[in-house]
Length: 138
Image 1 (cartoon, rainbow, N blue to C red):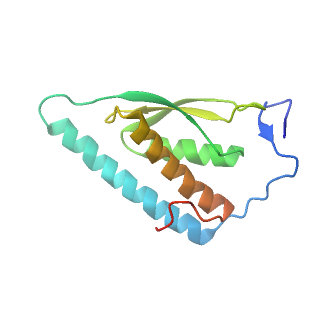
Image 2: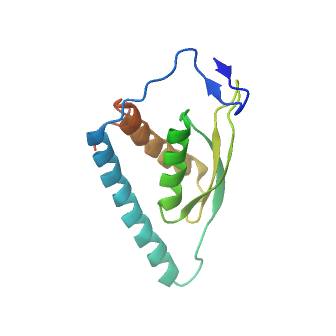
């Protein structure tokens, strides 16, 4: 592996061929729509509930996404989900992957946040690379 001088991003010796899956895209967009609806209900419920509104946390999440397309899809998917926002990214290097910094409004448990982000990334990479994700199922 080597990094490109322009971006400092880690590149493998052989270029990775992206094998986009239309069926995978439909499955991913249906799943993401469910996350958006669920997140909307969570935000609405907490907005009208008396007491503490938010329990925010910021996590640094290292990605397995390597291409600009993968990173952009991931950041966009996180930000479009109510209650989460990508604050920024750190470029990958030879020794470190690209990292996104995610603000979550309603969850202080970092392990749970990372688990949710990993599930999102698994599904996204399954769509973009036509590979089955480890969690399986729809």
